[in-house]
Amino acid sequence: MAFAIIYFVWGSTFLAIRIGVHEFPPFLMAALRFLVAGGVLYAWSLARGERPPSRAQWITISWLSILFFVFDYGVVFWAEQQVPSGVAAVMMATIPLFIALAEITILRTQQLTLRLGLALSAGIAGVAVLMSRSLYLGGEAVNVPGAVALIVASLSWASATVLSRKIALPFSKTMNSGAQMLAGGVFLWATSAALGEFRSFHPLNISREAWLALGYLIVAGSILAFTAYLWLLQHHSPTKVGTYAYVNPVVAVLLGYLLAGEPLSARSVLGTLLVMVSVVLITTQRAKPDASVAAERAAKALG
Image 1 (cartoon, helix red, strand yellow):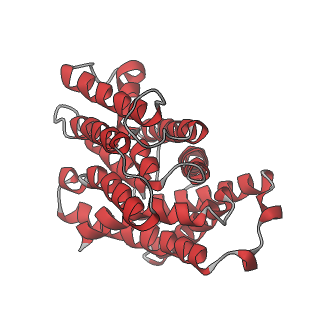
Image 2: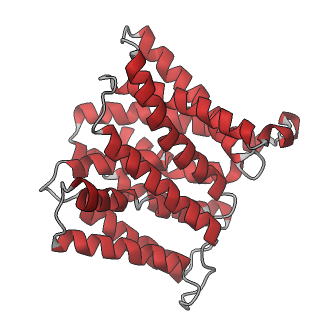
């Protein structure tokens, strides 16, 4: 049941975002999601007697939250106004690719092996297939501003992932995640206010479907799926748990096609397959333990 939750619930969150941002201002919707979910996880951690973050940890949490939530989640919510949910999930699955690039070129913790070279080539080719207007594969190419925004979001998440390995954070995963979600929600709220989203937001004009999508993201996508994820990490290997990094984009593509009428053309199928090959090659390599971390971070991005 726990595997089913992280496979299918996290895979379905992109469709819920797509439904919601048709009516909610994107940064405000993201803010509401993480303020509530983060508040619940943070309060739960305190109730269990876990120590809250120190002042120094709150500072580092705040910097990470800006990268993880404003420049990743907030941008994803914005991009899904123009990009199909399945394609958005596939684009975000390139996060391990950008982490690998950072490890090769900046951190020097990875070497450019044949396996990594093939993985990077497949991932780049997959994105190119989705964005190219010159390939006659059927279906429309991805909206360019939306695709660029998703690449920025992936880069932001990859940067924050690399940075989080070098700074002190709360030991408890629930406290760490709850604090980051809560801080991220605050920064998303401030961003929404700065963009003037409150002026166009009228709660009574939001349909029941959009409110249900937001509730699903909060309860199922954040609280339930994250609890299942923590339970699985205590009972199974990170490699086995990390398999949802491969499943989530496929679930998102199929749900978008079946429930939202999103196109399933040769372009989207080929692009998805190439990106998935890249993800599998990067996250299943055994030489570097950081690969499993990349898989976990990538899958959390899908949630």
